[in-house]
Image 1: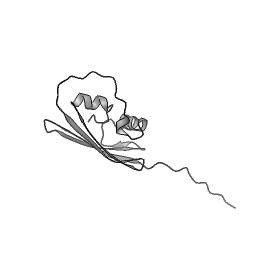
Image 2: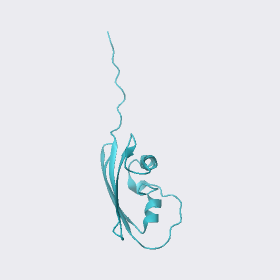
Image 3: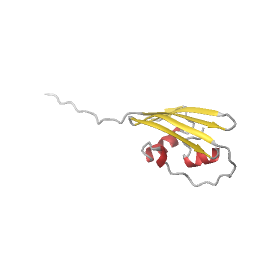
Image 4: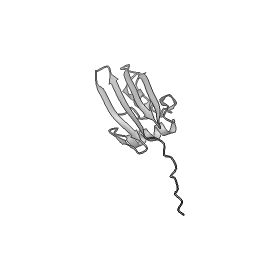
Length: 110
């Protein structure tokens, strides 16, 4: 008689399309995959760790401590995709690139 063991269920991979758009009409776009980490995001390991700490909820990302200038040059950011099988749709406008990078703890730093 043979017994087979089932492997523990792995959470579904997370795949997000991240975009930034600033007042100089510069548009950035990357793909971020987590668990396993990959995609075109230049800081994929850190971005995945930040999102894992917030359980994929962009509104719960802890901003890092960093001073930014008060120059107003808005940056719109979006994230669309899935986090561990759940749909994600996030949009925010930050006052400038520094604030976007700081407040997202580099998730939108690309």
